[in-house]
Structure formats: structure tokens, C-alpha cells
Length: 154
Picture 1 (cartoon, one colour):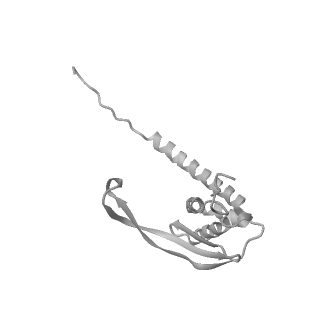
Picture 2 (cartoon, one colour):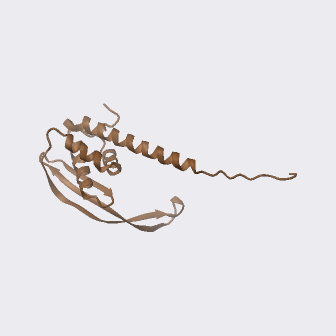
Picture 3 (cartoon, helix red, strand yellow):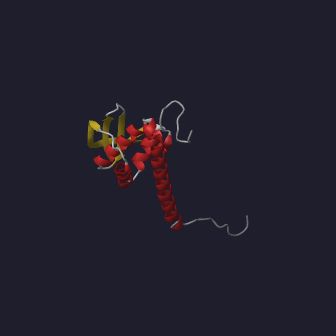
């Protein structure tokens, strides 16, 4: 059983799959869809559509909640011909990415696609980790360390 397998599900952990799809580049999801030998038939249950969600914050991380602002999101819900329902959401104005994420979520529920979805999620997580490391390196290059000098006697 791979690290991505969940003991009480037939396929990969849906939360992890959905998180990876939300962070993925659309081109990677398009490439996965194009690479499927037998593309499953599906129908749209909802969307794809674009709307707004309210972003909430908490003062100090645990204090009183407040409305930080709104963010644009795209979402989609699809049903495979075999009955699995997939959900996809992503920040921004990209309804096709939301639809592709919903397809991946639905395929992740099928045991015959578990291995390829696990590989896709691993590639996405590697890409995200690489991008995070590059951003951290760029940020570290501009870091200024301040220190206090003690002058004179104690």
C-alpha cells in the first residue's frame, strides 16, 4: 500500500488529491487528461462556474474572526459514467482547471486509476515544493539581518 493510500478508501486520499489539483498548474492537469488512453465519459453536475468566497482571518491566529476580503474561485462538479462524483475548486478565473480537477478527483475514487493518480499527485507535490524552494531562495537573498550592538560598559 503506497503512502497515498487511505485504509478506509478504495483509492488515494481525496483530500490530498484535491489539494494537489488546486495547487497544480493547469498544463499539468491538461497533460494528464490528454495522456489517458481511455478517457472516461462524464457529465457536468454543476458548472464549471466562477464566483467569490469570503476570506476570513483571526487576530493573532486564534483571536476574534474578521472578514479579510473576497477571492475569486472556480468550481466544478462532474459525474463519471460509472457513477463516481468528482469536485474541483481552484483560486482564480480558470473554470477548465476546476473541471479537470473534478475529473481527477472522480478518477481517484476508482481502484483502476489509483496508481496513475498517485503518480500525478507526486509530480504536482514535487513541482510545488520546487517552486516553494525557489521562492524561499529568492527571499533569503534579500534578507537583512539586524542586530543590536552593546556599547560601553554593562
